[in-house]
Amino acid sequence: MDLGLKGKVALIFGASGGLGGAMSASLAAEGAKVVLAGRNAEALAKLGADLRGQGAEVLELVWDLADLSSIDAHFATIEDKLGGVDILINNTGGPPPSTAANVAADLWEAQFRAMVVSVIKITDRALPHMRAQKWGRIITSTSSGVVAPIPNLGVSNALRATLVGWSKTLAREVAADGITANIILPGRIATPRIAQLDSARAGREQIAVDDVVKQSLAQIPAGRYGNPAEYGDVAAFLASARASYVTGTVVRVDGGYIASI
Image (cartoon, rainbow, N blue to C red; front, side, top):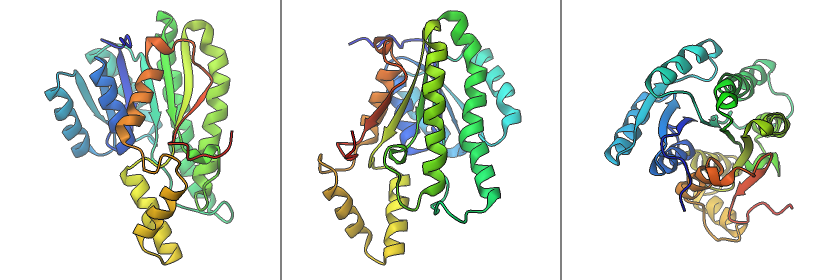
C-alpha cells in the first residue's frame, strides 16, 4: 500500500526518545523528509545518521519545547532547508511521577508550558502552510492515562487529557481545509520511559522490577510489551493520504491493555 508520504515534510518531537524515534523511522521509511526535534543532540545525530544510511532526507534540530521564543526561528530553518511542515507529530516528554494532590504550583506551571502550551503554539505555527495547500496531518502522542488514569502520574494524566480535548476541538476547525488531527496513545511499549516507570514502581512497592513486569504482562491480552516500531507504523498510517477521513479520534496502540471501551 502506498501511503502517499513521499516528499512530505514531517516534524517529529521527542525524536531522541523511544516512541519519537520509532515514529521518525516509520515516516522516513515511507519516503517522508523527517525533521528530528529533541533535546539530546547526541541521540538525534545517531538516529539521523541511521536514517540517512537508509536513504532518508533528515534534519536534526536541538529543540527545547519549554522555550516558546525559539519556535519561529526553528520553523524558519525547516522551511529554508526542506519546505513547509506537512506532518506534525506532537510528542512531549513526561513529567516526573507524582500524586494529583499537593504538587507544587511551579511544577504544574512548568509542565503545562512544556507539555501543553508548546504543543498548541507549535501547531498554530504549522497550520498556515497546511491550510494553504489544503493538506496536513497533526498527530499528538499522549498516554493511556488519558483513558484510564495511571496511579502516581497525576500531573501527566491531567495535562495529557488537556491535549485530547484540544485536539478534538481542533479537528472540527480544520477538517474543511484537508487537515486531520488525531491522538495516538501507547499502552505498555518497550521504551526507556516504561522501564523508568517500572523501576519507580518497584522502588515504591519494594519488589523486584521483574515482578513488576510480570504483573504488567498479566494485564495485557497480547501477553507482551509492544515494539516501538509497531507504534511508529500506526503513526505513519495516520499521517498518510490513506487516512484522510480519520480525524478527531483517539487511537490506542496497546495490545488490548486498556479495558474500557
